[in-house]
Length: 210
Image (tube, rainbow, N blue to C red):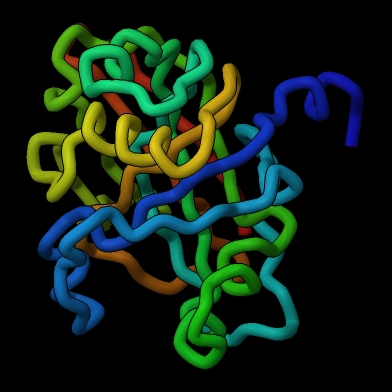
């Protein structure tokens, strides 16, 4: 890995599971009463144009397009207003998941943590109203997922505030806010694109070959 890519790594990637009702339902899960958190390692990050590597340990690797938040300043026990004002930028994230290992392991570190399992796009300016953000996932040019932040069970400022009461969020940290319904398998040769867009037309897209 080159120095440029290493410098762009966050200290941590905090992820939120089942934050869209339809996605929880498609996997046969209930919506959690509180945000369901997990971590992905910074070593899982790849950037636009780099390839997702399918691990031999899994027979069911799936895409999960998500709205990603880049934290701009330290948050600890922060209010929702403080959390909103700390959003530095927005990025597209693909929370690639070995679904079979997620089910068999019971906890998600291995299923979510393989190298190349976190493609991220370039940062864009966040809109004033974060609920207007949209996320779209395309596989080989076909739309597979489409969601809006307003559909989230737990809104973005609430998530940041909630996380900050558990672990301190540092500048540069990423928060992946959950995936809408429509997740599905990736196979060798696929091209998966995740786009996060604002009403102003700004967009962050990450494209990854498999």
